[in-house]
Length: 535
Image (cartoon, rainbow, N blue to C red; front, side, top):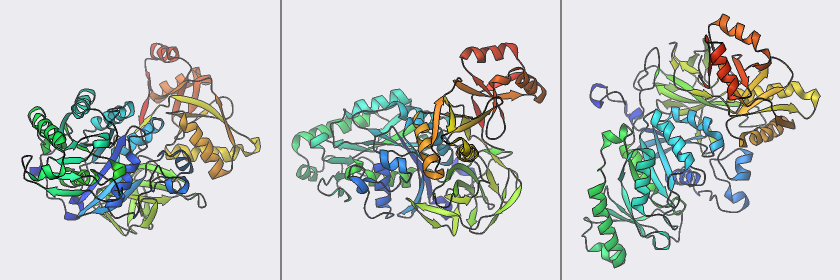
């Protein structure tokens, strides 16, 4: 948000109608259900796949990995596009499970805004806080949705206070709940002076909306019991005095978040939230890159890979690189330059995702997310341009917090395991380190659940049973410095050295003491816990 809106040219209408955003939340706050309802209102699906239903019926439309279906959690971030009114929404679903934070972190580099989903009973939870910090680093505008108001939840002022204190961001109510739990009737829409009533009978029905003239309108008494109406009038008056009004500039700079209340499972409050994204959400933004920033209205097409998903179709071993278009008007069949390898690539079968259905993308604009099937040429952080050597910055790779060695159940299949692990490393699902000494691989992940995901995917997709065993090492650091200094350091610490899947040197440590020792004995070498994923 560097520029004031005055000195930038108007965006072409096709780009200006794009809204690219992610949904972040703690597990179980109702993010997948909200995603479903978005698709339902966008007309992308006819019947939302209830997460609570039994068996096959409970598979939601945006979860397509076997393990997600078994456990009912979203593991891989998937992207979906759909139209809502005159707007084109590009929704990037992120895994809420804390064990997949790195994937989520990278996903947030590809969006212009985020919706934070909070559970009305639990308030701000640990994972929400972590993801929020990431949005903070990028100054992403944030819209908040307080979910599950149809269950017993906390006092509205308490929830707002908690967001303001824990996340250090101002909150302005966009709607105000009437009653809660069993008595939850609906909301009063503060932005448009409307009464929104919830229909408990039909979960997939849009709430009924009654236009009223402010809170003193006698019409209200026909719909709301007297005690709840008094409480509503009193609370809204307090909220208007104590909380800041909605200031679009402050919201776009990431200092203020509007909050809507509702119940995603009852389809309530979702439409108002969608109107909020359409009306207030940012259009595609300028992307940071070197040697220059890339503006969405530029004629030439550019984009960057923020996620690679391998084996989306296990029969074909294909990989799809998810690309966020940063500028221009892309058309199918265009020749783009793959900046890292300097080779031209004809993009003949790009896909758009509509839930888990893909369709060929004949065209796409800045702000859109397209999938490019490829055989491993595209990696996270790669840039695609029409010839200019650009590198998009700010896509991080983190040092893993858990390390285990990985061996094939059948020693004769060790070669196949090499290949499978490399594939996951390029997808960003895990870090793979090849120790200088000894055999086997050391696999590093951010959360323990990822070992299970890897083991089940290697078995499903490659037919290879594998064992993960405890490793003597506890953490890994990338080694930075002058080439000679790094070589000298590596020679002296052979038993600790390994290389990652890009061939970069990595120092494996057992204790913090190892890291301190290096800092003391090798001042010209630096150990880092992150590395930028780019050429």
